[in-house]
Every structure is written in C-alpha cells, then in structure tokens.
Length: 293
Image (cartoon, one colour):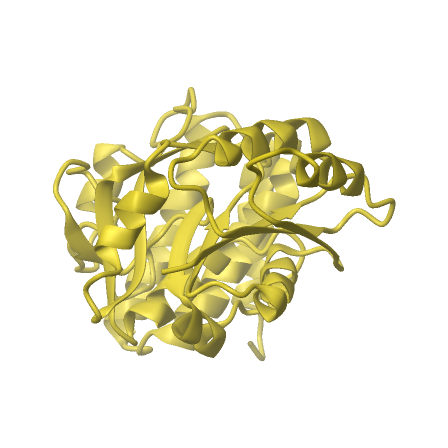
C-alpha cells in the first residue's frame, strides 16, 4: 500500500516547513509528497529543493498551479502515484504512526476513504462546532453523517471507530481510483468552502469511509484568520446552497430546514457581534434566493 501526500499551499513557506519536517519524521514515511503551489512567485519551490536533498526524506514533487483548493488538489492527483491519496493542509502536524494506522484501515477492501481525529483551536465565540445548538439542529443524520439539507453532523464521540460520510478538509484520504472518479468540484472557486464536505459525501456513495481515532492530526487553522469575514459569510451561504441542491433531494422539508440553517448562521454571527460576517450571510441569502435562482 503506497501513500501519496498531497498538500496545496499559497505563500506560507514557514508554516509548510514545519509540516514537511513532521512528515519526514513519520514511521513509516509516506511514499511521496506532492506539493501544489498556487503562488506565481513559486515561493515554496526552494523549500522543496531543500527537503529533497535530506537523507531519509521521501520523494517530494513540486507543482505550480492556479489558485483554489479544488483546482490544486485535482492538479496533484494527476501526477501522484500512490494507491491512496492523503490530502493534508500545509499547517498540520500528524502522529508519527499515521500511515501505519491508515494502512490498517485500508486492509478492508470495502473501505474507499479514511480519516481520523482532528485537533483544532477552539474559537472564543458562542455556537461553535461543538455547541449544543448544532447538536439539536433538526434534519436527521447521526454523528459523522449529513442532514437531509446537506449539513454535517460533527463527531461527538471521538474515541470510537465508525463509518462516516464526512471528512475535514485538512485530513482526508481516499483510494486512488475512487478519488479520481469523484474529484474535487472546481465550481467551488477561490477558498472553495465546503469542498471537503462535497468530496467526502460523494466518496461515501462508492464505499465505506472509516474514522480511525488513533490517526490524529493537529490543524493550526491559519487560513481562516486571513480571510475577509464578510466574503467568508457570503460564501458559507452560497456554497452550501449550491451543494445542497447538487447532492440532496429538494423536498419541502429539506428546503425549510436549510432556510432555518441560514437563519441560525445569521443569529450566530449577530450574537458574537461579527457584523461584517453577518452582512455577508445576508448578502449570500439574497444571492441564493433572488428571483430566477
């Protein structure tokens, strides 16, 4: 079982260095690393050349790409040679035995994808990912699954292995053939918000996605801090509406619950006094529900 690690990056060479250092220390190591750089100045290329000269470093391939997570990941899949693609962000650290844990999961032939526990900084705000409000939001779906209106139920029990439909974008893995069949949706341009949900949900239709609690990744989540909150708020609504219509039956109940979700997103930003983000949610809703859409 050969593992190819695919890492999209953009003007974050210092952060990327820590991630590459960590991957080189893994036991066993990945079989190759494919770095997809969206910086026109190719700022990550010298770092790749430096690591390529290290004794014991896995082969590292450098690709230049147009910006956009979906575009970059699809670009990387075209050249990666592994049996399993491991999609990581450039600001993560992984446990030393990550690839051994993944290899165990993929011994089961019905498994087409695998992920693990992701540790991220907790935001200092009301209604975060682990909030009780999100847990009681109607719409069906057990933890690790999707509601009928396309919203993921995040895992609460992080210690129990299980089959899931949802993987976080900073740590997703898939068998080569399945990943090439699903691909990432390049209609989700720029930041490509929720492309991980779309990819993992469509991947789950091809087989089992396994949650492996021993496969632990720490994600610094640096990208969010540099993104304009108003634009981000708009993308939350526009991208989620697009994926809801794309992947889920458009029943009256599902559409009503999606509208409730948008209202919850707006209230969440208002409670946290995130006025620009709230304005973005309103703009996104106006775009989604304007006449003719």
